[in-house]
Image (cartoon, rainbow, N blue to C red; front, top):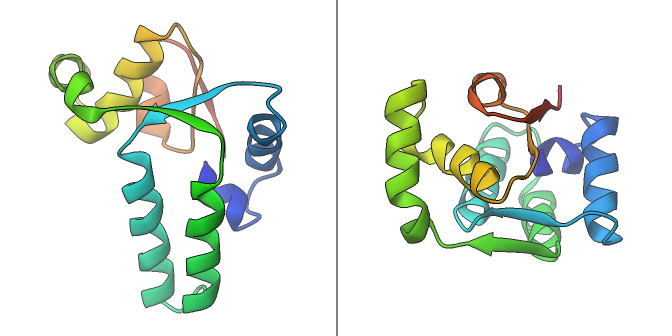
Amino acid sequence: MIVRAALDESERALEWIRAVEEEQTEGIAPDLIWLEVGNAFAGYVRSGIVSLEQGRQAVAAALRLPLRTAAVGELAPASFAVALDRGLSVYDACYAALAEAEDALLVTADRQLAQAAVRAELIA
């Protein structure tokens, strides 16, 4: 969702990001999120969709988001169980496991993850 908002691909993603920035809603994510955002923009830079400077700026902007993060080490046991139970990667399952532990809505652009979560909003 952070990547879609940065690329202006989704008005709904932008709305969620604004709500987190303005602290109208609390954002929480596994600390893995920073690497996933960096990896996504590295791919966009490699493919020529964004310039190196645009990629750097997008990663820096993501890091400024007031997200509360949870250590993936603490999420690993629940993520492992969710992954096996719902057919997800352990990486993706950590988002569902965290959302469920926090009784939070999972906001994602990943259709499979949204379908596997207890409560989710798919950002298309």
